[in-house]
Each structure stands twice: as C-alpha cells, then as structure tokens.
Length: 471
Image (tube, rainbow, N blue to C red; front, top):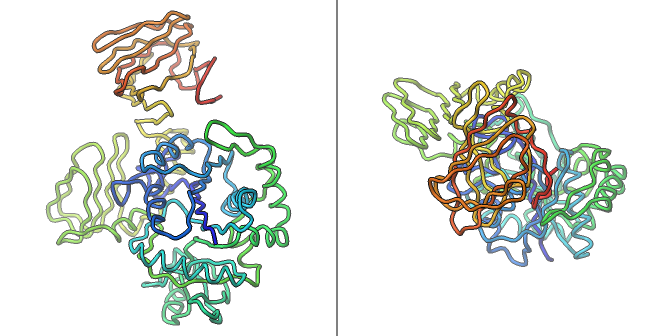
C-alpha cells in the first residue's frame, strides 16, 4: 500500500512561551535537537517502505518558514495546504484525504503532529508496519503509547480484542484526561494507553466514514478545496468555505463513533513536548538533574531546566525551576507550574502586547528583521535579505527611512530609479517615496535601518508589487 505522510503543523505551543510564539511556534523551533521539530518529524520517516513525500497542512502565516525548513533538509513536499483559520485536526485530515484520493485511490495516510518527539525511530517504523496490517483489515488506526506513569495530561485509550495477524487491538473506548486516582488505576490495569494523536488509515475509508458521521464537515472541506487557489508552492483553501467548517478533532469527529477503530501499542520514546517540564524530562541531565542549554552558569542548582538564548544566565542555590531567557522576555517558574505558562500568554493578549506573537527577530519570506532600539518618533532595525530575494515595492505614509549597508550588496529602487550600494554606503527614503530593497548578490545582505516619523507600526505599508503575493 502506498503510504503518504500528512504533517499537521497548526499549533501555537503557548505553554512553551517565551520561546514559542504565534509567529514562530514550537514545531518550527529546535527545542530538543539542532533541527526543528517539524524537520525531525519528516526526517524520521526516512527508511520506511513505499513512503511518499509529505503533505503539510499549516497556518497561512507560517507558509514561508515551513517551505524554507523543508528546503533545508532537502525535502520537496507533495503540497503545503494553508488553513485560513484553525479548525482542529479532523478538517485538516479531510482536506489531505480528498487531495490524496485525486492522486492515488489506494492512498494510505499517516497523520503526524509536527511537534512530537520520538526517540526510538526503529520502534516507530515497526509500529507503523503493524498499523498497515490493521488498515488492510479495514481498520482506522491510532497509536497508543504504552504509559510509564499515571499522567493526567493525556487522554487514554482502552484496548479491546486482538486483531488477527497484527499487534493491533480493537478500541474498547476513548477516555478523557483523568484525575490522578483514575490515571493510577489505568496504569495498574495494563490495558490503557496514552492517546498519541497519531493516525493511520486509508484515505478512501476515512472519507467514506466521515461522510457517514460528519457529512457537514466533509462538504465544507470539499468546498474549501474546490474554491481554493494555488499560490506559488502553496494551496490556499477558500476562506469562507473553511470558516463554515465545524471545528473538531479526529477523535471526536470519527474515532469515537466508528466501530472500526483500532489501536497499535507503541513503545517508541514518545513525548508531545507540551510544556517546558517535558523538555526537562527528555533532556540530558547533569549530576544534579539539571538540563542546560546555552550560556548558563549554575551553582548549587538541582532539578532545573535552564535555557539561555541570547545572554548569559546564572542561577544560584535554587531547585526545581524552569528558567528560559530570550532577548525580550524571561520566564522563571516552578516545575509544578509548567502548565500555567499559558496564563502569561493570556495576560499579554489582554494587555495588547506583542510578546506572545513575535520575537525581536521577525522572519519574512525574504529574510528577517530585528528590533534594536526604539524611542519617541524613531526605531532602529537590523535587516537581513537572503541572496536573490527582494522586499515588496512599497510606500509609507508616516515614516522616512535611512539604510546603511553593513555587508553584502543592496539594489535600491526609489521612485523608479535604481542604485547599487555596498558596505558602508547608505541611502535615504523620504516619506511617501515608492521604494524597494533587494539583494542581487550571492551572500546575505545585512543593513541597519533607522525609521523616523509620527507612526512606526508595521501596518504602515502600502504594497504595489510583491513576489510573495502578500496583501
């Protein structure tokens, strides 16, 4: 059976603030290795038999980052589908299934969240092979993680009767996140698994059963695909149709209703990295049970996770803490409060602040910019433009800009007149001037931008032409 991986990359990872933010969520970050979690998800598929390129379903705002991260690992996706808004996992899976059926009527989908950690890749491959046997028997498969503790943060799956010729079992029932006593009872019983959120099924059977149990959802997804449009390397779903789609998980929409659900037991070193404490759980610990990343000095510290992204962090005589430093925010929390980090994000949203959404370095399809300083009527940024890339042809109503080239070559257009600037050269863009910045060279262009004016917000941009087709 041809196997098609479908990577679901729509989460925001609020419990991993201040590193994970709306514009750069946890699946696009190198949290547990030097590669991002999305990249690790795709790389661990290597070596499977008859597996095709991945199809990625993601947030529209992350499309260029995802395309770049796939390019970095030498993978050309089968497609990158852009959700105009989040509608949970079932509609994302439906869009993928409908797309794959047009390509291959025998397609089998392996649905994987982009933000899970799996340490035992051979065991993962073996679990998928067992799942394929169950799919051949007409089953919709989920993977149940063999629990090693009475965890209350996961849903559970109770196994039923065995299926002939495979380690898969029928699903007896799905259970919501339990209290501590119930979780302990599940662990002792030996017949309950953690619900991993990973699935394997025939695209045709998934669509047929969704037609039976959630025809409204399937119809909305069909309309979203039919009304969608291809944009560069992306497929942009129709916004109005997808907005009408009910929001629901695969579990609720289908798996808890169908009599064909099966579970494959999986001991694969799995963790969904749902909070900073999970990174402490899976990290390499020192003699005092500390996990450290970055420029960190510890003295008398025990059982803590300490991460420095931009500056030195020193901690003395503390225990069981989570300390995470970024250029514009620092988190200090007791390990037991890891799940409460989302309260900080809620506060930032209500206060109208930006630290929940953006880092000081903001990525764009052409490169990135980074805030250096800001005051009354001025702002200073550091800008990097990738070789061969260009910003939109644009104009500002409320600000002027000074550009100083630090390294590389800049082609600057001002009211239709072009000039080339190299290291230590500068130019001035008066308020109201139509302008464009591009990098015609083969190395990255770095420059300093000084903005001055009455309003310096990013929404003061009128775009006349944009190769990335942004609004």
